[in-house]
Amino acid sequence: MIFNTWLFAVFAVITVGVYWSVVPSRFRPYYLVVAGTIFYAWAVPAYTVLIAALALATFAIGTAMLRAGDHPGRRRALLILGVVLICAVLGFFKYTRFFSATVNEVAARNILPIPQIVVPLAISFFTFEFVHVLVDIYLGKIQRLDALDFAVFTMFFPTLVAGPIKRFQSFAAQLRPIVAPPPEEIALHLYRITIGVAKKTIVADSMSLLAQPIVTPGAPYGHLDYWVGTLAYTAKIYFDFTGYSDIAIGTAGLLGLSIPENFERPYWAENISAFWSRWHISLSTWIRDYVFIPLGGSRRQPVVVLVNLLVAMAISGLWHGAAWTFVVWGLWHGTGLAVHRVWSQSVVPRMPALHSGRLAVRAASVVTTFAFVAFGWVLFATSSLASAGSVYAGMLVP
Image (cartoon, one colour):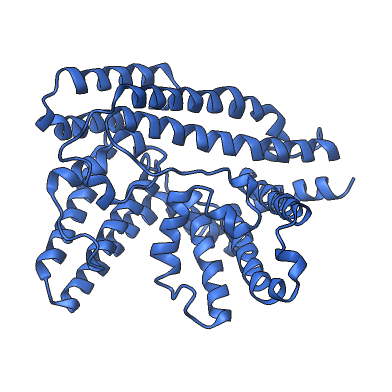
């Protein structure tokens, strides 16, 4: 189900209404699992088996890790098994076509068949949540894994399609018992949902026509069209993503549960690092905690840290989509983060005017960061690197 449809509106109203008026308190977690299963099965029913099987495998491996106690070797082996299994499932369904097409393109002939695989709904989100659970069990951050709590965590329908990516510890702590929100909070949650729908249907969707020049570049469009298209897509993707997040957060609130905020005025960021602390926060913190820090974080040699930034952001790009445009988009931001790190550590300390807090410096920083992000969205929007190159050429060559 798509959030900004009448079908979802009816589903949500019935689900929330029955949830508070009919279902006894102790049965509400079970009800959420059933509601989430119906929600997920509506798209591709067969893949409900996939998410259930992977959830059961994750739960079994996580439970075995907890029972392993003070046997670090066994815990590590179970962690590797679980993460490899989860990533293999994600890789098979989401990236097999991409891999085969890349091999054929490099070889300039059809060496591998292109499989016709339907990507399961939300596979990028629930696989990342499963990896988080196993890693946090290994690190000792999760001491207990209850089957019902994990089932609700897995099938919680407000976050199932487009996040935010939840953390098990903070989510499960709210389930026993689930407390009904007071009337004033209900009003705020309804307002949040209304704003989210407006962002998606009124603003984001209305930008689609203006953004068309960078989605399908070509002869009909001129220099100004590409600039307008880039700005329109920059607005479209923000209001699209934040709209979905607002609906998810508001719906979760109506169910008495809190989920992470995902956006915090990212286009007002004064540098690219601040942008990523405000944009898709649940994803950026996941990449930081489960990719960048395991690679060594900021504790390694400066050159290694910069390489790790590139690797982490390339993975972030590939997570968004199985295409080289997404990988290069990730590298674009990884390069921006690496340059900002060098700039902030080596240049800014020697030039007091750059960190004086003056309005002109801050304004220039915001404009520069916004321009960097907007240029990057061209890679995100286009279907190939050649198309992205056409857009950049159209923008920069009148």
